[in-house]
Image (tube, rainbow, N blue to C red):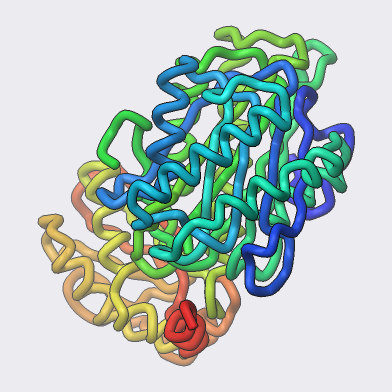
Length: 412
């Protein structure tokens, strides 16, 4: 697998076309309407936000997937407007764009999957999306440049596009996975099944030329998401629009079988893991990417619960911004996480530097050495709870004045 930003033509999944144009939705005037087409349709698996407040495209997208049994012919994404908290007008505007997309790309209305990202509560400019569709159709293609147009157009406060790919060799035939994602703020995805509770936004689109049904794809997507996108946080805010969509065109001719399931799942995990890391690495104002490795837990869920408490602590996050090895904040956050443990059994390391051991500051604690570790762009903090064998790795970041500046001025 390669995570290079430039995509090789050979690694793009067959059976898809991509394109994007400027529709005048973004104030910057940059690309803001992106489309992915599966001319012969594709089977879909999807996970949506668990936020109780959801955007219009999630409501419409759920409805469409139920109507088609998970079949998608066109993905229609706009950036610059979330179409959330826009009332019935937002729903009607979303439907209007899907109708226009179906007419433009010659598919059934319910086979259009909509997505939006941007500011919440601003009336949705459906007319701009509709007017842009003929131009999008003219940009469609299956080359790396076309795929990258799609990846660029979905960005909002992102500073760079986020793509990843993997190839699985099946008896000499390549099965390709290519993914594009966006997200830099309002990132603490809590993704669940599309029929579950109604979660700037994380959007991820995964494409493969494997032949597989929607039910099979959902069984692969859920665990991949749980250990990637559901294990990251920039600011602890769960978006109203978060979506991870996996589409399988079947164009490779390779059918998902028991023999292929494991290698394909591994490749999908790699792509999801790469995109998740790229999202945190490009987070708003981020100067340090911190992996929280929680070990010695009774269950993986408890390990993640401790990680989230630390990842969402403003005191921990601001300490990371200045490379301050204040391990007391780590211990305190773990202590209020709701997970029961004995502090006398806990060990904490920053990088390889021991800072806390068995109830007190480690006798080997070297503040200068720990500070030096935290000056690096990326490092790992390990916290062992000393009560089991379960663990998790959770990727998060520091909280800086630049994050405050970006979000203090976001709507103005």
